[in-house]
Structures are given as structure tokens and as C-alpha cells.
Length: 122
Image (tube, rainbow, N blue to C red; front, side, top):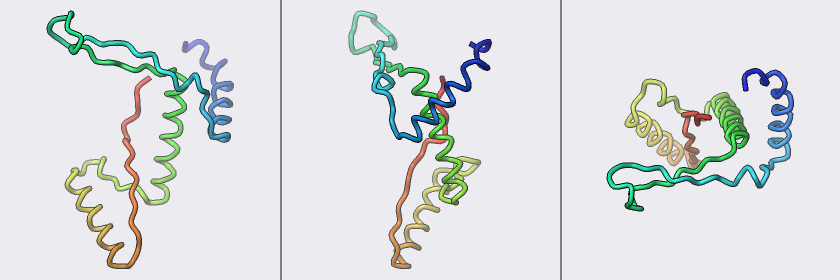
């Protein structure tokens, strides 16, 4: 695949940008191939298996591009709390609590958006 990278990149970039601009996702990109993954013990027991959904690679790429763009944009606006960089969950919750209380004291409405900063793997 690395050999074809230079050849495919412009077409894939155009396609991803077009899908974002049009706010559409091809129906086939939403169809997952589900396989069963064996966990442990007796392979004859159905409850031992767990389903794994595999989506098309281009769908994962589209999700990663959108995720990255959203993180950069929301961080630029100062809407992201940086607890993921060396701070604990308790510190994040404390900051969230203070922000909500400050908004309530000021007669404002508080809202939040939770994003998982871990990128998915291809």
C-alpha cells in the first residue's frame, strides 16, 4: 500500500473533503462485517464469543479526519479542558463542577461535549 500512497492520496483527500462538505457518508461505509472472536474456555460455548465489527477503512479514515479537525477547532476556541495531559479525572470533574456552578451563579446555561481523544487504529 505504501507504494500506492502518492497515487491514491489526492483522490482519497478529494473524496474525504467532498463527503465532509456535503455532510454525507456512503451507505456501504456504514455496513460492518461482524465476526466472532473467541475469548477463552470451551470453544463450543456460544456465550464465550464476542462480536467484532469491522468497518471499511475509508470510513475509519473519514472518522479520524473529522475527529482531528473537531479537536483542533474546539481546542482553538478554548472549549476543551486539558485533563488528558497529566491531570486526573478528579481534577477534570472538579473543573467541570466549578464551571457549571459559575455559569449557574451568573444566570448562564452550561453545556458540555465529551470526546474520546484516543485515535482509532486502522
